[in-house]
Image (tube, rainbow, N blue to C red; front, side, top):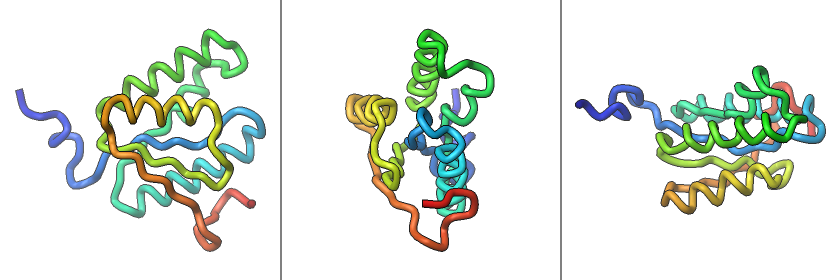
Length: 123
């Protein structure tokens, strides 16, 4: 069986994004969109479970939140690195993602968006 990572990658690095979601959801999603843009412009193929799964699951229902987080962590097993955007701090959910990356031996890179990189989010 061919290495799926090579098939999927096509020259881009698979990364799992860590940004906050809960709390000020509107602000956090705007921030995430800018982080995804930054990642894409770096030649990465980012994945953010909290952007995708929260459209199908209710983050305010603990059981559904846990399903979404778990699914994101499982997907992350395919990622080459975890990228943590720190402008808004590190939430408990982000901490779980960082801990999982450490457990898996995945590279963790911390980044900060700078002025000029904001499209939707405003500090």
